[in-house]
Amino acid sequence: VTGVQTCALPIYECRAKGIFRKEKIKPLPGDNVEISPVQDEEKPAGNVDAILLRKNVLIRPAVANVDQALVIFSVHEPEPNFHLLNRFLITMEQQEIPVIICFNKTDLSTEQQQEQLRKDYENSGCIVVFQAAAKGEGVTQVEELLRGKTTIMAGPSGVGKSSTLNCISKDRQMETGEVSEKIKRGKHTTRHSELIYIGEDTYLMDTPGFSSLFLENIEKEDLKYYFPEFTPYENTCKFNGCCHIHEPGCEVKKALEEGKISKMRYDDYCMFYEELAQQKKW
Image 1 (tube, one colour):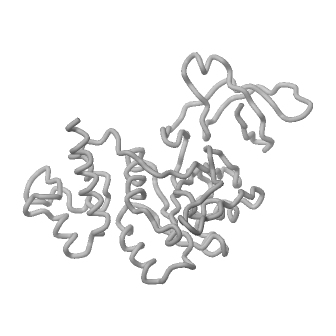
Image 2: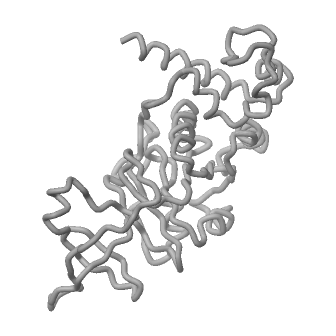
């Protein structure tokens, strides 16, 4: 059973036709579909007759027709997992999906910490914003960035995704996940992907929190192309095909030494490169 939002705004509870199962096609959150209403005295209901052409499809989470991604990490409680964030950015870069990085719980951080985060990601090709959703601070900027687009919202448990959604979607109050004092991680949070109507032509796909992302379908030699901050130095290194790790005369490593590239981001690049190299050995 799938909920289908219509132009007139009622949500129809729909069943997908058997032909979709036969063709191994499954309606996804974000799909544009054609439906035929059926008589149901209790609620609007119908059948999904056709799934229209998708402009993109994500496998994990399984969603379609995404314009951009909003990834939320907290500044503290829990501490940001940069390995996970950087993996997510590579995955979105593969799909050519623009990313907004939202650092939440700024009331728990200092200006200096926020400035370091801004500096680390200023050349990553992403928009970086800061907010304290629980206090309603900084949410207006996020709302502006979402307007008129279909956005996938992702992030680990306990970072304030539900609080953010509650600020943005006035009609839809999510149960805010408590954060355990012992392990500083969320509980009772999103279990499935869901498309939420925010306003005219504006939708948010709330997706389950993620704890790991595996890099797939990337050759280690191509990994550098998924780090936009390396792009200005491409083809300027001493050696053609420089991987920016061991080679002498590397302009990326020079930019790193000069503070033009984030050391945290570069260290993750080296770690991911080695990870991909090990994958090929098996």
